[in-house]
Image (cartoon, rainbow, N blue to C red; front, side):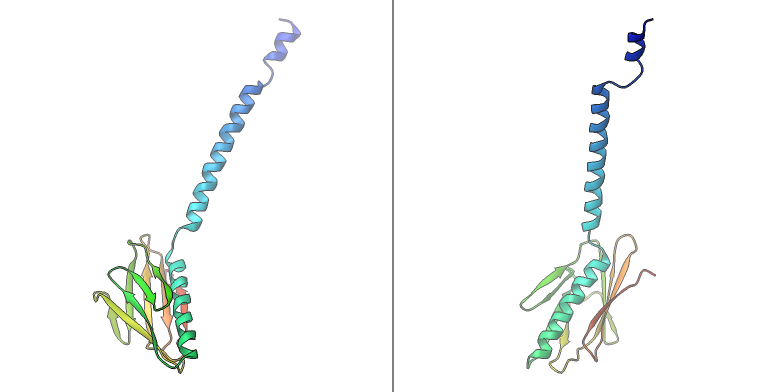
Length: 154
């Protein structure tokens, strides 16, 4: 064996290096896409935050006006809406439970939470449960009318 044939067997060829880099780039891009899909996925906490923002916006509008405003929660379609505001649609697999006053409501078709011009509200507690056991809770204080989100999984 001469020196030239020993050098040919010592390292990687250009084609082998390009193939390895292409495979690494493919694995990296698939991982990045999966991560971005998980990041954008709806969770009970994200949904609860959207609902709380809607509730607080209606509270502010009612406080500036002269008449009561309401937010409608449709338990069958799992949609929360308010007049002149875009609503929040919960994913189909979520469970939704609402306590208004002292009554837990899970089987009625829809209910309303009222926000009054003096800053008060009818108050409520909304529980959102995800399919993997993650939960979020929204408390709407009847005295202040403000909605507050908390993690109910703990």
